[in-house]
Length: 277
Image (cartoon, rainbow, N blue to C red; front, side):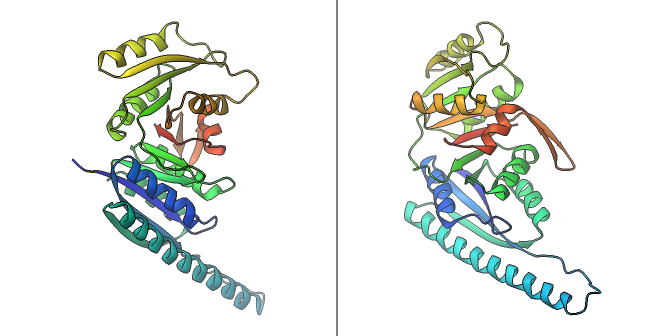
Protein backbone atom coordinates (compact mmCIF):
# COMPACT_ATOMS: atom_id res chain seq x y z
CA UNK A 1 0.00 0.00 0.00
CA UNK A 2 1.35 3.41 -0.99
CA UNK A 3 1.91 5.87 1.85
CA UNK A 4 0.70 9.46 1.55
CA UNK A 5 2.30 12.35 3.37
CA UNK A 6 0.46 15.62 3.92
CA UNK A 7 2.38 18.89 3.61
CA UNK A 8 0.63 22.13 4.66
CA UNK A 9 2.37 25.30 3.46
CA UNK A 10 1.55 28.75 4.79
CA UNK A 11 2.01 32.17 3.24
CA UNK A 12 0.96 34.41 6.15
CA UNK A 13 1.99 35.87 8.53
CA UNK A 14 5.30 33.95 8.43
CA UNK A 15 5.54 32.36 5.01
CA UNK A 16 7.06 28.95 4.38
CA UNK A 17 10.15 29.44 2.23
CA UNK A 18 10.52 27.62 -1.06
CA UNK A 19 13.65 25.95 0.30
CA UNK A 20 11.79 24.65 3.37
CA UNK A 21 9.01 23.30 1.13
CA UNK A 22 11.61 21.55 -1.03
CA UNK A 23 13.11 19.93 2.08
CA UNK A 24 9.70 18.60 3.14
CA UNK A 25 9.12 17.07 -0.30
CA UNK A 26 12.61 15.59 -0.18
CA UNK A 27 11.79 13.97 3.15
CA UNK A 28 8.65 12.46 1.65
CA UNK A 29 10.80 10.94 -1.06
CA UNK A 30 13.26 9.61 1.51
CA UNK A 31 10.53 7.66 3.31
CA UNK A 32 8.81 6.51 0.12
CA UNK A 33 5.65 8.60 0.40
CA UNK A 34 3.66 10.46 -2.23
CA UNK A 35 2.59 13.95 -1.18
CA UNK A 36 -0.67 15.81 -0.88
CA UNK A 37 0.01 19.52 -0.47
CA UNK A 38 -2.26 22.35 0.61
CA UNK A 39 -0.92 25.86 0.07
CA UNK A 40 -2.86 28.36 2.15
CA UNK A 41 -3.17 31.87 0.71
CA UNK A 42 -4.51 34.41 3.16
CA UNK A 43 -7.90 36.10 3.22
CA UNK A 44 -7.92 39.03 5.64
CA UNK A 45 -11.11 40.55 7.06
CA UNK A 46 -12.14 44.08 6.12
CA UNK A 47 -13.14 46.31 9.03
CA UNK A 48 -15.21 49.49 8.85
CA UNK A 49 -13.51 52.67 9.99
CA UNK A 50 -14.66 56.15 10.92
CA UNK A 51 -11.25 57.75 10.43
CA UNK A 52 -11.74 59.30 7.01
CA UNK A 53 -9.15 58.19 4.49
CA UNK A 54 -7.66 55.61 6.89
CA UNK A 55 -10.10 52.95 5.72
CA UNK A 56 -8.81 53.38 2.18
CA UNK A 57 -5.18 53.09 3.25
CA UNK A 58 -5.91 50.00 5.37
CA UNK A 59 -7.78 48.42 2.48
CA UNK A 60 -4.82 49.04 0.19
CA UNK A 61 -2.48 47.41 2.71
CA UNK A 62 -4.73 44.36 3.00
CA UNK A 63 -4.90 44.01 -0.77
CA UNK A 64 -1.10 44.20 -0.97
CA UNK A 65 -0.71 41.47 1.68
CA UNK A 66 -3.23 39.23 -0.08
CA UNK A 67 -1.57 39.80 -3.47
CA UNK A 68 1.85 38.91 -2.04
CA UNK A 69 0.34 35.83 -0.40
CA UNK A 70 -1.21 34.61 -3.66
CA UNK A 71 2.03 35.15 -5.56
CA UNK A 72 4.05 33.24 -2.96
CA UNK A 73 1.42 30.47 -2.97
CA UNK A 74 1.87 30.12 -6.73
CA UNK A 75 5.66 29.99 -6.35
CA UNK A 76 5.39 27.33 -3.60
CA UNK A 77 3.04 25.22 -5.73
CA UNK A 78 5.36 25.37 -8.72
CA UNK A 79 8.40 24.45 -6.63
CA UNK A 80 6.64 21.54 -4.92
CA UNK A 81 5.33 20.17 -8.20
CA UNK A 82 8.79 20.30 -9.76
CA UNK A 83 10.44 18.81 -6.67
CA UNK A 84 8.01 15.89 -6.61
CA UNK A 85 8.51 15.35 -10.35
CA UNK A 86 12.28 15.27 -9.91
CA UNK A 87 11.93 12.60 -7.21
CA UNK A 88 9.34 10.56 -9.09
CA UNK A 89 6.68 11.14 -6.43
CA UNK A 90 2.96 11.34 -6.93
CA UNK A 91 1.73 14.78 -5.94
CA UNK A 92 -1.68 16.36 -5.38
CA UNK A 93 -1.76 20.15 -5.01
CA UNK A 94 -4.48 22.44 -3.72
CA UNK A 95 -4.36 26.18 -3.09
CA UNK A 96 -6.90 27.31 -0.51
CA UNK A 97 -7.78 30.87 0.46
CA UNK A 98 -8.47 31.13 4.18
CA UNK A 99 -8.19 33.34 7.22
CA UNK A 100 -5.11 32.54 9.36
CA UNK A 101 -7.07 30.66 12.05
CA UNK A 102 -8.97 28.71 9.41
CA UNK A 103 -5.67 27.67 7.81
CA UNK A 104 -4.30 26.04 10.96
CA UNK A 105 -7.58 24.25 11.69
CA UNK A 106 -7.81 23.22 8.04
CA UNK A 107 -4.32 21.72 8.09
CA UNK A 108 -5.21 19.57 11.11
CA UNK A 109 -8.43 18.38 9.48
CA UNK A 110 -6.77 17.54 6.15
CA UNK A 111 -3.98 15.58 7.85
CA UNK A 112 -6.56 13.09 9.19
CA UNK A 113 -7.00 11.66 5.69
CA UNK A 114 -3.28 10.91 5.18
CA UNK A 115 -0.75 8.60 6.83
CA UNK A 116 1.34 11.37 8.36
CA UNK A 117 1.96 15.09 8.12
CA UNK A 118 5.35 16.43 7.06
CA UNK A 119 5.85 19.98 8.29
CA UNK A 120 8.84 22.11 7.32
CA UNK A 121 10.29 23.96 10.32
CA UNK A 122 12.38 27.11 10.27
CA UNK A 123 13.83 29.12 13.11
CA UNK A 124 11.78 32.22 13.98
CA UNK A 125 8.84 31.04 11.84
CA UNK A 126 6.07 31.15 14.44
CA UNK A 127 3.41 30.26 11.88
CA UNK A 128 5.11 26.92 11.19
CA UNK A 129 5.15 26.18 14.91
CA UNK A 130 1.48 27.10 15.24
CA UNK A 131 0.55 24.75 12.41
CA UNK A 132 2.68 21.98 13.91
CA UNK A 133 0.90 22.33 17.26
CA UNK A 134 -2.51 22.27 15.59
CA UNK A 135 -1.71 19.14 13.57
CA UNK A 136 0.03 17.27 16.40
CA UNK A 137 -2.82 17.76 18.85
CA UNK A 138 -5.74 17.93 16.44
CA UNK A 139 -5.19 15.47 13.60
CA UNK A 140 -4.75 12.09 15.24
CA UNK A 141 -1.83 11.44 12.88
CA UNK A 142 1.93 11.40 13.42
CA UNK A 143 3.79 14.55 12.43
CA UNK A 144 7.29 14.59 10.99
CA UNK A 145 8.92 17.95 11.72
CA UNK A 146 11.78 18.69 9.34
CA UNK A 147 14.28 21.53 9.89
CA UNK A 148 14.94 23.44 6.70
CA UNK A 149 18.67 22.81 7.14
CA UNK A 150 18.14 19.05 6.81
CA UNK A 151 19.45 17.12 3.81
CA UNK A 152 16.97 14.34 3.08
CA UNK A 153 18.28 10.78 3.10
CA UNK A 154 16.78 7.34 3.59
CA UNK A 155 16.08 6.68 7.27
CA UNK A 156 17.20 3.26 8.51
CA UNK A 157 18.04 4.27 12.09
CA UNK A 158 15.88 6.21 14.55
CA UNK A 159 16.32 7.18 18.16
CA UNK A 160 13.25 7.09 20.39
CA UNK A 161 12.85 9.23 23.50
CA UNK A 162 11.46 6.56 25.81
CA UNK A 163 9.80 6.96 29.20
CA UNK A 164 7.38 4.03 29.05
CA UNK A 165 4.35 6.29 28.60
CA UNK A 166 1.31 5.83 26.38
CA UNK A 167 2.29 8.65 24.04
CA UNK A 168 5.83 7.29 23.66
CA UNK A 169 4.42 3.86 22.80
CA UNK A 170 2.07 5.48 20.28
CA UNK A 171 4.99 7.34 18.70
CA UNK A 172 7.00 4.13 18.40
CA UNK A 173 4.12 2.33 16.70
CA UNK A 174 3.61 5.25 14.32
CA UNK A 175 7.31 5.30 13.46
CA UNK A 176 7.25 1.62 12.58
CA UNK A 177 4.23 2.22 10.37
CA UNK A 178 5.48 5.32 8.55
CA UNK A 179 9.26 4.82 8.39
CA UNK A 180 9.43 1.45 6.61
CA UNK A 181 13.19 1.48 6.08
CA UNK A 182 14.08 1.47 9.78
CA UNK A 183 16.10 -1.55 10.89
CA UNK A 184 17.94 -0.01 13.85
CA UNK A 185 16.52 1.75 16.91
CA UNK A 186 18.39 3.47 19.72
CA UNK A 187 16.26 3.64 22.85
CA UNK A 188 17.10 6.85 24.70
CA UNK A 189 16.22 7.50 28.31
CA UNK A 190 17.03 10.78 30.02
CA UNK A 191 19.30 9.87 32.90
CA UNK A 192 18.67 12.83 35.17
CA UNK A 193 15.58 14.59 33.86
CA UNK A 194 12.75 12.89 35.75
CA UNK A 195 12.25 9.66 37.73
CA UNK A 196 11.77 6.67 35.43
CA UNK A 197 10.87 3.10 36.16
CA UNK A 198 14.02 1.01 36.43
CA UNK A 199 14.71 -1.19 33.43
CA UNK A 200 12.26 0.34 30.96
CA UNK A 201 14.96 1.03 28.38
CA UNK A 202 16.33 -2.50 28.45
CA UNK A 203 12.79 -3.89 28.39
CA UNK A 204 12.02 -2.05 25.16
CA UNK A 205 15.34 -3.14 23.65
CA UNK A 206 14.41 -6.74 24.36
CA UNK A 207 10.97 -6.29 22.82
CA UNK A 208 12.38 -4.71 19.66
CA UNK A 209 15.13 -7.29 19.31
CA UNK A 210 12.55 -10.07 19.34
CA UNK A 211 10.99 -8.39 16.31
CA UNK A 212 14.26 -8.66 14.38
CA UNK A 213 15.37 -5.04 14.85
CA UNK A 214 18.82 -3.94 15.93
CA UNK A 215 18.22 -2.15 19.22
CA UNK A 216 20.32 -0.76 22.03
CA UNK A 217 19.76 1.37 25.11
CA UNK A 218 21.45 4.76 25.44
CA UNK A 219 21.20 6.78 28.66
CA UNK A 220 21.33 10.50 27.86
CA UNK A 221 22.88 12.76 30.50
CA UNK A 222 20.84 15.97 30.46
CA UNK A 223 22.86 18.12 32.85
CA UNK A 224 22.13 21.82 32.49
CA UNK A 225 20.78 21.49 28.94
CA UNK A 226 17.06 21.57 28.11
CA UNK A 227 15.95 17.96 27.81
CA UNK A 228 14.72 18.61 24.26
CA UNK A 229 18.20 19.71 23.20
CA UNK A 230 19.93 16.87 25.06
CA UNK A 231 17.78 14.27 23.31
CA UNK A 232 18.23 15.81 19.87
CA UNK A 233 21.99 16.11 20.29
CA UNK A 234 22.13 12.49 21.44
CA UNK A 235 20.18 11.47 18.33
CA UNK A 236 22.84 13.12 16.19
CA UNK A 237 25.65 11.53 18.20
CA UNK A 238 24.32 7.98 17.67
CA UNK A 239 23.80 8.60 13.95
CA UNK A 240 20.01 8.42 13.89
CA UNK A 241 18.22 9.85 10.85
CA UNK A 242 15.30 11.02 12.99
CA UNK A 243 14.16 11.20 16.59
CA UNK A 244 10.82 9.73 17.65
CA UNK A 245 8.91 11.06 20.65
CA UNK A 246 5.45 11.40 22.12
CA UNK A 247 3.80 14.80 22.04
CA UNK A 248 2.76 15.67 25.57
CA UNK A 249 -0.07 18.12 26.00
CA UNK A 250 -3.67 18.86 25.22
CA UNK A 251 -5.61 21.57 23.51
CA UNK A 252 -8.76 23.41 24.35
CA UNK A 253 -9.91 26.25 22.13
CA UNK A 254 -6.37 26.18 20.70
CA UNK A 255 -4.89 26.86 24.13
CA UNK A 256 -1.90 24.51 24.29
CA UNK A 257 -0.45 23.10 27.47
CA UNK A 258 2.69 21.17 26.58
CA UNK A 259 5.33 19.12 28.29
CA UNK A 260 8.82 20.56 28.47
CA UNK A 261 10.40 18.30 25.84
CA UNK A 262 7.53 18.83 23.40
CA UNK A 263 7.64 22.59 23.80
CA UNK A 264 11.42 22.61 23.50
CA UNK A 265 11.47 20.60 20.27
CA UNK A 266 8.86 22.83 18.66
CA UNK A 267 10.88 25.90 19.65
CA UNK A 268 14.33 24.64 18.59
CA UNK A 269 14.56 21.78 16.10
CA UNK A 270 17.96 20.46 14.99
CA UNK A 271 17.03 16.97 13.72
CA UNK A 272 13.90 15.56 12.02
CA UNK A 273 11.46 14.57 14.75
CA UNK A 274 8.48 12.24 14.37
CA UNK A 275 5.97 13.23 17.03
CA UNK A 276 2.69 11.56 17.97
CA UNK A 277 0.05 12.52 20.51
